[in-house]
Image 1 (tube, rainbow, N blue to C red):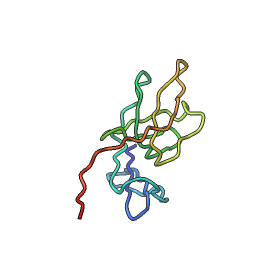
Image 2 (cartoon, rainbow, N blue to C red):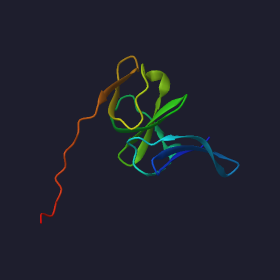
Image 3 (tube, helix red, strand yellow):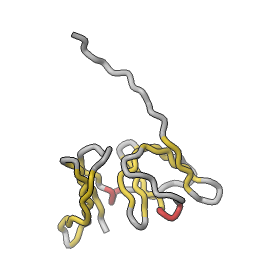
Amino acid sequence: MKLRLLVMNGSRIVQHEQDGQWRNEKVDKAGALKPGIYNLYLASRADKRATCSGLIVHADKDSVFQQVDKRYVAHARADFDKIPEIGSALRISYDAQGKADVSAEAVQLSRGRSRSL
């Protein structure tokens, strides 16, 4: 089943494809998610040997979806003791037993240019 999120006007709309049409499944508050279209059906399975850092964009009964750079990673929901909060920036790695180890992602400061008047 294809799954995507639409985030606009402060709402997060969960959609799935049925007979070539996108159908709304659930609507709730967007929280910290930026407006846009999140094509979660393009997500790759999490590599348990790697660490993933990024924003949690969705969680359903099977998976927890994380945006890592410009791609999506699907973590198995069963690997988490507690499901992460949507919109939180997290670093997810796995222990020797295959359970998810979740920690807050360090805030990265960037140098930007600003115009002073």
